[in-house]
Length: 88
Image 1 (tube, one colour):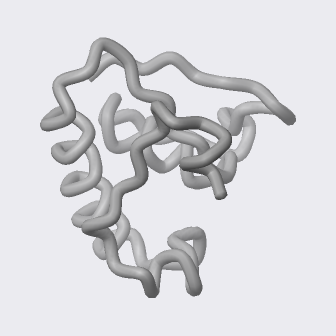
Image 2 (cartoon, rainbow, N blue to C red):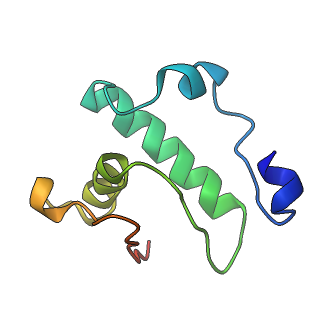
């Protein structure tokens, strides 16, 4: 389990377990936006200096789009094992 291997790892246990089963990649944009805003608020509530969000490249791009309020395309996806630094 992730928590055993990474004791400092915090999992958002308040999110619906259905999200783990169905994912958010194919979710309608309006639904994703609401979910993402709530998740980012949860991240801020953790009051940590730095948070790492590990996710699919398309999902990360959707978060970047929401945070920066800029339209992004597939060309803006992070590469394999790439990471993005975003301040919000």
